[in-house]
Image 1 (tube, rainbow, N blue to C red):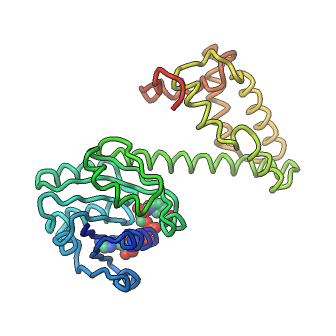
Image 2 (image 1 turned 120 degrees about the vertical axis):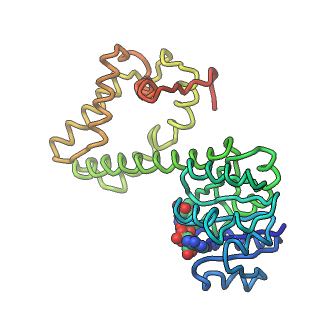
Image 3 (image 1 turned 180 degrees about the vertical axis):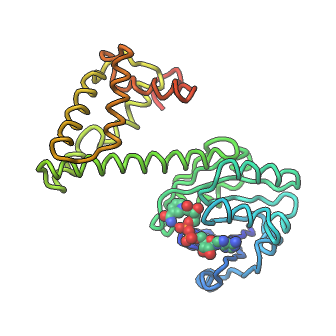
Amino acid sequence: MRIGFIGLGNMGGPMALNVLKAGHTMVVTDLRHELAKPHLAQGATWGDTPKAVAQVSEVVFTSLPGPREVEAVALGAGGILEGAARGTVYVDLSTNSATLIRKIHGVCAERGVDVLDAPVSGGVPGARSGKLAVLVGGDAALYRRVKPVLDSIGDKVTWVGSIGCGTVAKLVHNMVSACSRMAIAEGMTLGVKAGVAPEVLLDALSKGSFGQGRVLKDMIPNTVFPGAFDDVNFALKLLRKDVGLATELGREYHVPMMIAALAEQQLEEALRRGWGDKDSMTFFRLQEERAGVELRTGKRGA
Ligand code: NAD
């Protein structure tokens, strides 16, 4: 296939090299010409603008810092839409705004240009080794057509729904990752200040049910999805007791724990609802109420 690749930074550079290695012809561009050196050495050619890249490509990829750059490169002067013929496919690999990629999809559709959002996860090592998770949103038949190219940059390429859904999934992933890491920072500073060695504490965290990944692998699919809050594995009142003991320890050792304090208040509210003897995952219902959405699939398992 004739591939265009715009944005050869930390992620885009190695991803583009892997697409080249898979045997596609490629035209590349970036604001920094020097980043294209390895690609040009492997047979790629240079395009002066995103428009010039799109003019000679069947599939155009972008890997750009964020929404501002993506909008300018896709829709701006000298951008992809100015150069793309009808039937060209534009795939955005950046971590972008879901609303913006949906807008770009709409504008491009009027000109016969197809769009997928395909943000990636796995960092620079994953980009180099071709072992990225790629979360794709857009038309399913179009996804199947482009998947062989996506397979050259990731080993976990997944279709997650209509246009923008890849981005939604990626943003949820990174938000959850950030919040979890902050809770772990609170927990580890508490544990170390209260006497446990850092590496021993990390090992203890890794061996427990949280560290074993049971929230994602078991509790959400088997308790939240079927709404099986009366099948009690661990009572909510016991989780509330444990978080209370941890925040008490934090006060003794003068460790500020903002996330734990919030968790404690949520569990207190769940207790007030009379859910103490239900499963600890019942607190999900508080957030479901606030968000106005339920996470039920009606069956057990993901
Ligand atoms: P980067 O800043 O290294 O690369 C972005 C590239 O885009 C740069 O080389 C820049 O010169 C180029 N660029 C900017 N504006 C341009 C324009 N108008 N025309 C042509 N080129 C332009 O960033 P990165 O780390 O490679 O990240 C790229 C995207 O991937 C981001 O959206 C990021 O959030 C996402 N991401 C990054 C990682 C990571 O670990 N670095 C992991 C997953 C996802």
